[in-house]
Image (cartoon, rainbow, N blue to C red):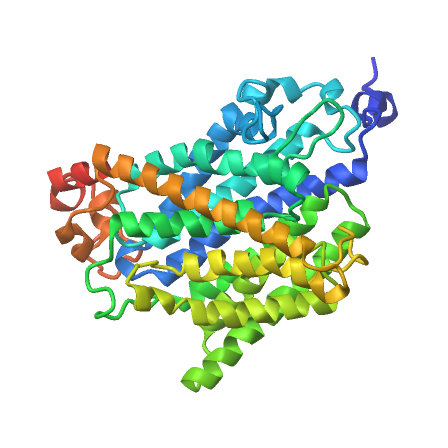
Length: 456
């Protein structure tokens, strides 16, 4: 008996009717790009903190990746994309629980891509959003408390907001109120990802309070090389984030790819321009932060603006965010890694900017104020962005307070001063002494009561 040839096996691997192999391949690649943003963010954030808390910062990102992915599959996707339970606020949490309902080809309906792949793609959006929040409380949070917070936050904050803005009604399916009733435009997550992460981060920063020495001691990034590398990986992954939201290898994806590239470049130039005029020099941290600011602003607007509009959007975001990061010193909140200044402010710039710079020539087909569209779309964007901010801020603050009361969210003062990595994880990021290993499993460093207490 001869082995089967590829021609013999072709019927077993052929695309089922209704699926587009090109679109599916692009969404698979885009999902992988979004996943790459998680280690990219870990490097970006890890380089921005002090050397004594590098691993803890990175672990908060990787911990978010693990817990959010599981919860999204179990129930989060259903809350976000299940049939609406009323008023466009939340989807049916049981409809797609576990995603087993999406394993057959019949579940795809008229979709050009497998719905189980779409579910994974959307789940990775949640991963990045949750990980972004952690930057606001760097250097002072218990790892166990963070994991508890982000688990509840996924189901109570992010999933409902994703239902509001990303779940469109189709056929018998009823989606969220912002997308279908209010008409807010958010192509890839300016509200659900950027405003939500910024508002949640602000709430947690207020719950945990300021770091010891905030505003007095220098708290400079310990490794700008990591920051630059992380920023580059984020920019690379952002093409999957934005262009992947077209859900196909098509003209919309090509336009979005272009506007994403331009906005990132313009954001870096905008931030560097502010530094040069204000401080007399342009910095690598400014370049990295600026390109992220531009990418944040273009996320909701990438399918609504022209290439020139993308340059304007990115440049404005770079300038505004560069100025906004200083607000924490004026108002006294300790947003450790500028989640508020970059993601909240940048998300607002991009969301509101649609009402000004959108052009009907772009894929979403809506004119903003500057293109003769009047104030209608701007009003929709203002209401949508404001509602997301209010909900994310209030509910995240409540979750943070409950976690703080239940298990303590902030580490002890002496451990904050000595370094979270050694106390919480029994590790250090850099082995700089020949006689000391990077890990200790016993004694004061690894097996102390303090270490076990902090892990809880």
